[in-house]
Figure: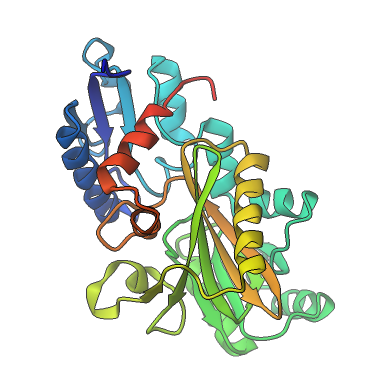
Length: 312
């Protein structure tokens, strides 16, 4: 059967804090696509600007970047400019999903439960009394999660158990970021659900060995989180979380594969965020969910590739 695309350019690495994870994802996808019979080459934006990609030898771009400049609409805008079909979500969807404030506003507008939150700018750093006032006014309970507005893989996420630790976390993060989001911590089960090409694939449960599912829990073997597939939920609740993930994918107008991260507590699902370019490493969740559903890694990568397009 004639393939839709022949020459695939896998864009990987980049300059974000998730560079190493992106390199792992990209290399795994290159291997899978070669097994599927595609002509595959690699491109690292850290070494060359995206605008030098040669259209003559590129039928499609497999975007394996993670984090800022790769997952937030920046790389996607280059691909649109070059008029080369590319995988995953488009410019606006990627930007909206990456920005935790915008995405939460979209969740709320569409009646999708998410933890209470407010944003804080660096200019407000000295106003401790204002922070205390907002926390009390919004009736936040500790612990409180503090994180950058536009990072992935739990980079920069800190959990504060009191005001003293909260101020320390805020000061530390403002050395690197201009805007933070403060979110009420929700306990309960960690549930993550995958959607591919508009269809719910499955939901997995995570039991971190660490205090929460942070970067080390996600990507280091020594801190490897316990994965339970399928998630331990009553059948109706399992179906419900898949429906919410599918709805989230739709309302943000995402394409390809997404992974929505939830907390499940007292019968309710709280959506933390949606990832438009989830990891494709040996420890990644989407490949594990797909495998349980009988989809090999090679077939998963090809499914994502065949959904590539422009003008998303």
